[in-house]
Length: 273
Ligand code: ATR
View 1 (cartoon, rainbow, N blue to C red):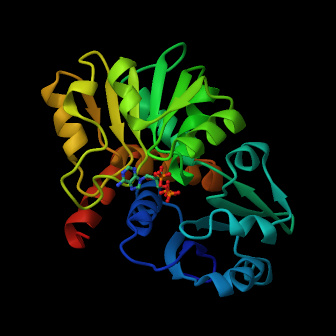
View 2: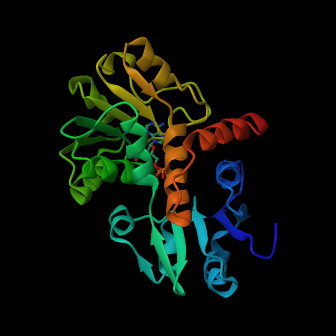
View 3: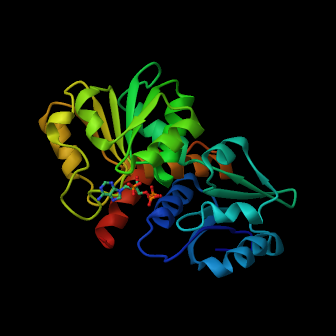
């Protein structure tokens, strides 16, 4: 590091096991960019100080994670149209002394899906109606997919469908009758435990099934999908692609995707949560 080293980071609470520093630092090294990326554990009552501190320190880039993605907006000068529609900011950039909020989660989800399928004109089912669902539904809408939102609490699915212009909403069990081309799990079901939000027989063989849960990497839902003959996409790709888009935004450099994916894997081996 030198006096000129660009300092970036992520604000989150608790700091836990984020793999973002590993991905970004590996990318900086691979591209010969003099920068470093740090995880800042910022509790909610310090968020305002942390964000306005960017201006004081001339810190140009910060990523924002749980639980700050919505509350951070109150501390910014501008929130771009897409982040405003999603209702969450995961990227703050200081430009001409203005703090600007953007969202790369939706592009991350879309790029991850595009590894297997072009969503345009396809029928996609999103399981869940929380924060993660918002970015996924928005991304699918931008790509021209027809989206159904299914959730344990049906009213939340309905509200999200109305707000983001999805085709329909319903309970999780409605998946049994839909036979979509794309299924994305955004519920927390399967996180750290071997359960699935969908019965195996609800997963059509022609579908691409992606799980936003990335711990464990090969969730019950993904294993069921593979067994049914469907294509399974681990949630790790959503995280790698969203980080890659942040890297692009901040450095104007094409992100080294393989390097970032390898760093993501290595960080998981170093500190499995
Ligand atoms: P996030 O921001 O990670 O999406 P969230 O806003 O708390 O977190 O949303 C969690 C999602 O997982 C919701 O869709 C939730 O369903 P409800 O709206 O019915 O609460 C879903 N979820 C959590 N636990 C679940 C469970 N055991 N079975 C089915 N869905 C579950």
